[in-house]
Length: 148
Picture 1 (cartoon, one colour):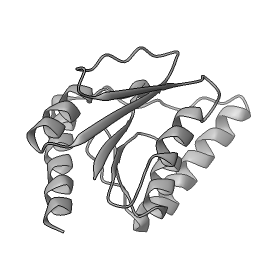
Picture 2 (cartoon, helix red, strand yellow):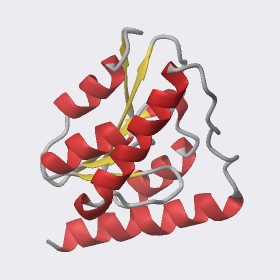
Picture 3 (cartoon, one colour):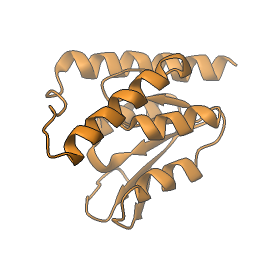
């Protein structure tokens, strides 16, 4: 079991490092070369090209069953679940197969609106409560997987 991070825009890197350290887990931060990721030496950073979806493919190609992926991307989360991994957003939302169709439909509709020249709201600013929910839910996932 390891934690893989879609690190391009992940606002919870410090929290991930704390939990990885606490449970002695490997954490891998994957980002495009357009983003500079700084983490302690004991954690792996993988830098990929800047092509669309290249970071997502690098994450999914390294994901196995029982791995945890931190991502805001519903499409990547769906692929992780298909590989019997676990996915969680930086706001602490644990992605589930039962809600994935709805999330992917929302994403598709937003993309359709933007392609037609429309505007959609971006994500709200990350709040303290979001980070607290993330820590609680990531630890729940880790403890459940350790107990398996």
